[in-house]
Amino acid sequence: MALRRFPCAFPAEQLTLNVKPLRLPHDVGRRGKKRKRGGKDTAESRPLMQSIKHMLTISKPLSTGQAHSYHEQEFANSEQNYYSEARGVNGEWHGKLASEWGMAGSVSSQEFYRLAEGQHPVTAEQLVQHRVATEYQNQQGKRVQPAEHRAGWDATFSAPKSVSITALVGADERVREAHRESVKVALDELERYIQARIGGNHPAETSGKMIAAKFEHDSARPVNGYSAPQLHTHVVIFNVTETADGKSHALQPQELYRSQRYATAIYRSELASRLKQLGYEIERGRYGEFEIQATAKSIWKQVVLVASKSRNTSKPIRFLVPRLRK
Image 1 (cartoon, rainbow, N blue to C red):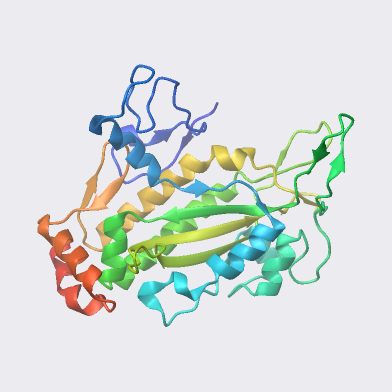
Image 2: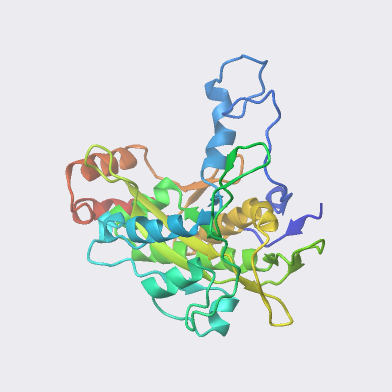
């Protein structure tokens, strides 16, 4: 397996990543500590899994029905933006294929739905065979439900907790823009490894083209009426690409999953570098994760306290943000 190298804001030992999917051995606990079978997890085992938790996550394939439902209830739902309710969640196009098709600006429901169906977003031409799941009975007499058409995959970039609080509760729009630009750079790099499923016994072909819809949210799901600040971006990578001969194909997702950790490292590196340029101090963890360094631990306690008591959180604690900079 070849190693990929990329410019990084962290020391040299962080520059090379093996992009094989992460697999923990059987004797490693859920939180990362090597233990005997049947052993219990301890606090010492948690740092590894905490770093994994903040990685870019790529979902299992979304069916057409799931994609439609998620678009209405999650991706484009303004309630997912608790800290900036005046803004709608219109979405934004990304990818070389989007540019070639003239897709720019906000994402309309019709364009999203057509792509989820494997159709061209403008002409509605069927680009990818749309398999309708029809239950049948096999030779053993069992009822079989085949897989539905794969509409795409939901790749989610989540900012570190301190970055979310600084951008949203502290109302530093520059930090939010740093997150956006870092997501863009990571996606551009991820796109290079997009592959087309050719079919038959033919191997997948690297096309380097995708079309994706980005939806930025600023809060987690409410718990007991309180929505915690959580800056994250859903990127729906649709199941269509185009090879050099101009033909449309479905995606081969294997390389997409393999590149997950690589894209995570790109996002982290870009975000850390941009935050440093804004004057924030960065505290790096053992596994490449980082947070904005606070000059006093009590600062975050004040942030959480005020945020939990007030819906309009930006004004009362805006004075805290300058204390996080150099």
